[in-house]
Image (cartoon, rainbow over all chains, first blue to last red; front, top):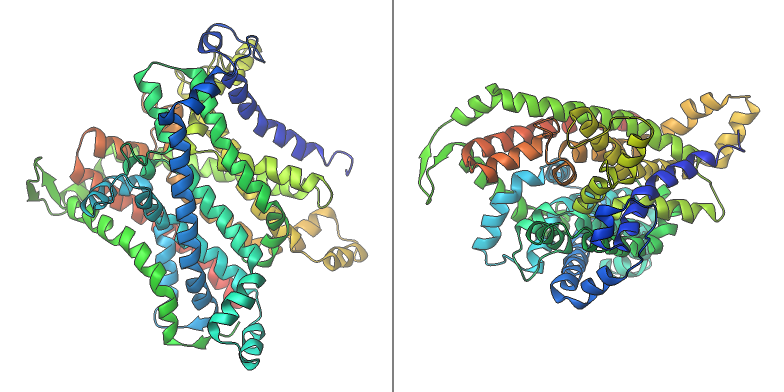
Length: 266
Length: 288
């Protein structure tokens, strides 16, 4: 039993890696080779696709835009969710349960529903085609999730911690920043991971709310494929590069995922 | 935990409330507004009452896409939950295998959704894709752009590839929270592997599985970008799920009224199912 146990995760990982390998494989081929020759590895190895992306500002600015609004969104979501999650985990107040479920309902609204009204709304407040517009619109689904996850972690911290600190003469602010936040650091790490993830991968709203200045990389890819025919090699290279920011984030939170998760609701 | 009554706690919630309401209230009201009216272009509107709602609820097109959506979500949950739990159970608990597994398994989750669609499109093409080419060379007549069965198979396989890891991560976290003492006690009692799973591991994973089911239900029910890029809803209407149909109606045909009515019905369906599920799970928690 234990000897074949490693087989399941291994097979699963191979299954996960196959499409990613295929994408990488194609990113090192020329478009002609992709269309004409079926091969498991590049016969005519080329870095040209990557060179194009790193030298053409319409391409690489897409990455800068995507990272910018994702980071904005993660910061806004987590800093707004921290006090709210604390309130939900520690206090009873008028309408608390309803408010908590109302927050979750926003996670349940299909983005396709909101695409058009969002476009009109953000245009009317003059935020159309800005990074902050995407960062704010992604709050719709990231804040509810952040509150939910953080509330779980905070509820796992005994209330005695708060009370002892007040007895020791800590003000609320000092207690919150000096004691409480370090205590739930793992939870904050996990929350940031989820916020980053959902903001980075979302396309529909990001594409709807931008034209040129703040256009995300994923939207630039769709545009290029339709205007200049199928530049498959270039697309594959651009796609491969979108995996990197996520991989970096996972690397930083890997220990939190293994240990930190266990503390809270998640 | 016994909470103290404190109305001032509202001040802590205000930032979240404002940010979410800013995003939710105005667009939602816009949708509600459209759903009762007819547009004639150039901002001319006429009151239509509940006509669109009646039409949508009776339209075969809506029934068809809703049906496809329900079947898709059902199959997805049926595959991903057992598979995810199974993989989490067999994952290494310590050593170098842990970070390797976690990092590699999380990768599909962090790829932008249209890249996921594009990459599966390329991967599954019968001539130049690894999956399509391999299936054809071992004798299957596989072509997801032509045959609806193959399109379904590819869409489901893509979603399993994309999201099973979320269930794995959450289950793994739940399993990690079980104290070794539980396993020792089970061993002394001579519990079988199945008993351990049924009476120790499964109850301990309840909270994380609730989250996993809710997230997977919501996201698969709202799936848009991946099938849009992979199949575009085709061949024909074979994989035309609710969101795809909605966007086609709203942006393609510019039928704002019916599209808005459909949005609201759609939203209410998701809301109702989540509310029922959430209430059941929370009631259990109160008792425990």
